[in-house]
Image 1 (tube, one colour):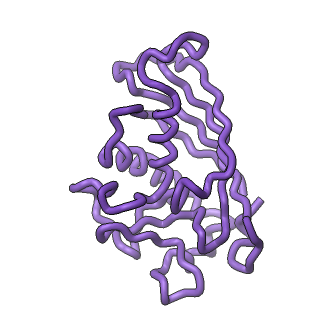
Image 2: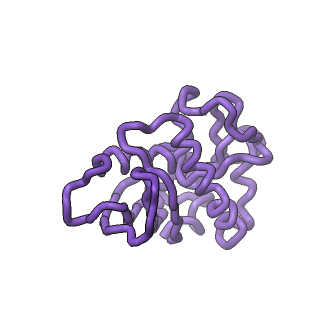
Image 3: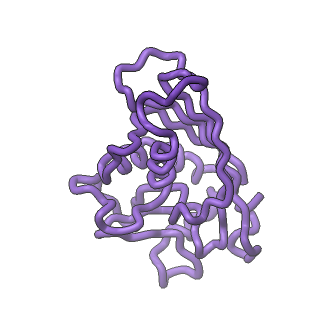
Length: 185
């Protein structure tokens, strides 16, 4: 399965925290909700049931918050990412406003459900098993390939951390099972 996500907003490097990761997750959530409304995910809402009520679940619970992670160990899926990172400074020049590896780490962490309770910020939008926050990944260790292209963002921005990112996702199966055949490329 292949699809594209986009993100326009702050992508902090060394200043990332639970709140900044959650803001990125919140921004990507509507796109992932839309993705789940179309084939092959449209008829797979059984995957979003709590463990024990279905054979396979992609729900992740952290501190009472629920996340619906498409690329999940239970489905034996991995993700390959092709990123186009548009940033305010010239791509050919020095990176003035933060290093690229920390910005990428921020993005990869935000594409994932929180790894532990400390990554769930206080005041986050309440979620439930029936209304999870959708994420791409259960964990960023399920990423098997990342390519990054950078270029200059040709738009006036006031925030030095502002970036526009195009995220091309290819979902692949580590092992084919009945539950993932229609989801892997």
